[in-house]
View (tube, rainbow, N blue to C red):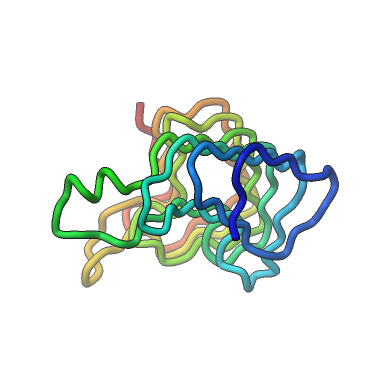
Length: 173
């Protein structure tokens, strides 16, 4: 089962499993707790409506370390030929605030390895390794390692960028 409602984790805890958010109107306040991937878990928190629309989700005050792919993944996997249906089912209004991603490996994402959108702010991205992100369909160079798209008050430092398709960090407004 996934989390739902307003969830506040105890301070100072370390979690070594994936937390799933599958329902709308859910907030997760990690209260400074750590999601530890041990370089084996791909994801710390997964937001995925599993074929149903999901919206109004917030994730805040979390620390993500040593994940093999993503600290947070916002997914929608069940594409249909109907683009309007895909838009209806895709997660929306997901806000990520005051989150730290550290000591993780972000590898081989077809899009940007990390995308900080308008709804995010005050995130700390440090001591991570970004490699091979942004390549699509036969090696076409499409994206960068980190996209900062109108996100505010973020600190990005001491990361290593290697062989990403379009570069390291792109800023958008």
